[in-house]
Length: 109
Length: 111
Image 1 (cartoon, rainbow over the protein chains, first blue to last red):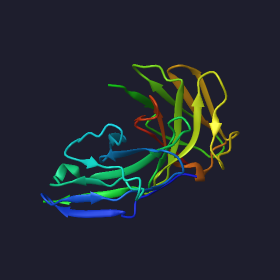
Image 2: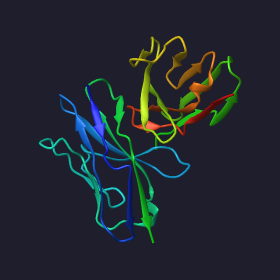
Image 3: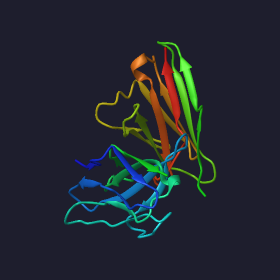
């Protein structure tokens, strides 16, 4: 069985401060990990995926297979980063996603 | 970029009636689409995988007779909630294009 855990339901940081959203997973094979973002009243959007090794909107995430983690980081949070963030995992079974519970990020001015 | 259109964006229906939700891939063909359900303040849970030209694959605990899925073309999958009850009220979201592009969701309220 595959599982994704986001231990923090809410992260509140000040503008310009670093932010890290934790994501741990459980999967027996080689997973593909994703971060999705959902801004207020908007659809879910793909933020980044581990195989791309990209930095989107200043966010990065590194897959740590030893710790089974895929934490999302940004060195300097901006107010427009306030949103709901979901970590997700895709296993071998054809691209269906297992989502974590989500973390709400609130960036205060 | 790839766009997945979902319709309607919200619907209110009476208990016992059926509601159809459409998911369309606008600029690409999707042999596979996915249907998720999201309860308030909770995460997305996969309900079923919709396969073009064949039967959908349902996740454990999802009633296939209640949530009818039809994927008759490469650009359209429909989810029909049959004999809806208030507990079916939820946010339903589809995805396509390798499962990574999501529709805007449908909020269903059953009264």
